Length: 112
Length: 115
Image (cartoon, rainbow over all chains, first blue to last red; front, side):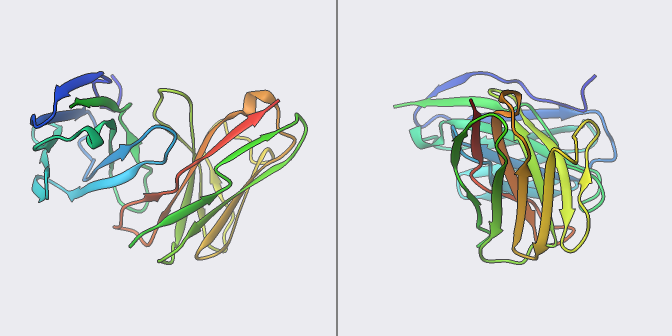
């Protein structure tokens, strides 16, 4: 079993839809959880950064962490064509001493 | 803030050439910088971690004599691919982190093509 599992998609939705992206993980020591957006031929851009369980909202984006289920989610409300990109989840056990473990990324297309 | 600049964005060169890639944190001081490699439709693979003023720590399977990393200041790290060959062609991405407990911020990557 891989440490972090993420459905690669592709996921195609109409403009304005609510998008749900998810990752599951196996390492119960993970405490720091991130979502990155990566456009083609660009580096990842940090969207959300959360510690431990709970929800965090930033504009149209909401991140949820359920440590009991080892499951994290990113919701995008009112999706736009400009949201079309690959979304990577990433996590680490300790912020300083252990490397980030990435999911493989989910390719999202928002159709106008 | 938290802007990371990476240069060059694209380089094409002949086999046997050495290539240097720069990574700069523009609006913050980065105690730690990271270098990744990414193959098409794959996730990021960590190559090495460097702390300012210290030798880089390389991941298993990454040749330290092939991929030279220098982190001379809190805002600059360089990756030199020595005697590059076609199999070194890839997308190389750096990231920088202010301090422990802070997230990594990524540069826009360097597309390296070795002919």
